[in-house]
Amino acid sequence: MSWIGGKKALRDTILPMFPLYYERYIEVFGGGGWILFAKPPGNDFEVYNDFNSLLVNLYRCVRDKPQELMSALQYVLNSREDFELVRDALARDSPKNDVQKAAWFYQLIRYSYASSLDSFGSQPHDMRANFPLIEQAHRRLAKVVIENKDFEKLIRQYDRPVSFFYCDPPYHATESYYKNVGEGGFTEKDHIRLRDALLRIDGKFLLSYNDDEFIRELYDAPGIHIFETTRINNIKQRYDPNSQFSELIIGNYDLSERERHEPSQMTLFDFSRKTNEEVMEEAEWNTN
Image 1: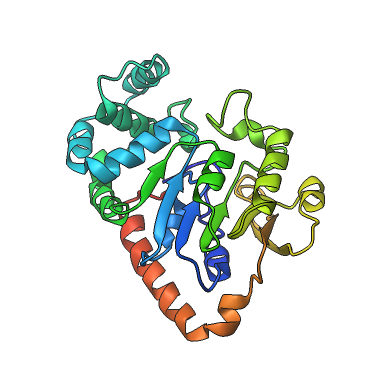
Image 2 (image 1 turned 90 degrees about the horizontal axis):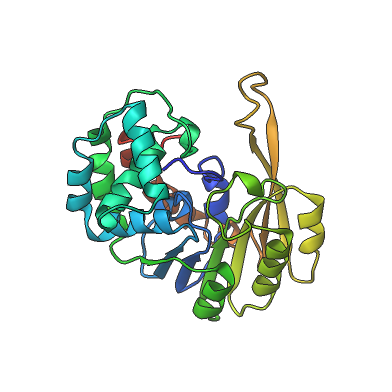
């Protein structure tokens, strides 16, 4: 699903950096779920979390009430007037139930410009084209715990020596682009609070960030590994197709351990992920 900060461009870099062994997978800033949906389901205990209550409600309805959700989406109108009515109704918190709230929120995501939730995108789209993907997402989320908690409380609750936390927080100095991340937004104090929480854990963590001096200094600590990478700059590519955006991937373990120890399993890992993605992209659930 298109969402600010989505990891479509980096999933092929991030997934091979997962640790060799863990029993609990916790996605702390779940957003559009790009990494969770690209990750093949296994025997590990999985948690999706996001602070955006509307997003969490949508995923809970996909998991628990897919048929009701699709029925609510069956005849939605792709018009500016209907978009504005739904947007204003959600702002007033006036949906009758969780399914209606989820349907309205998904309508805003699909029909807004660049999934901004604010302005109508004016692009024709048949909502029913997403139904196969809702069904697949329902199956993928069947055993996933879906939380709506502050990141520090979540990390403290699920931390064990066998836990693995993947974190994709709002990028430093871009926090204003993120919707509903708490009263006052995600602040510099929150970046520090996240660092402190991660450095205290018994488990492992992998963290995605923009390449920023403040972030580099924040994670300049013993036992922390930083990997530099680049991706296409989506904002600038319209007038500069070669523009790149620098990113950091940060962890508290050897980020190359999977590649070094299990090259054959990497092939199977990648194949399973690709199979899952093909169905999702055909139905346009994860459309950017």
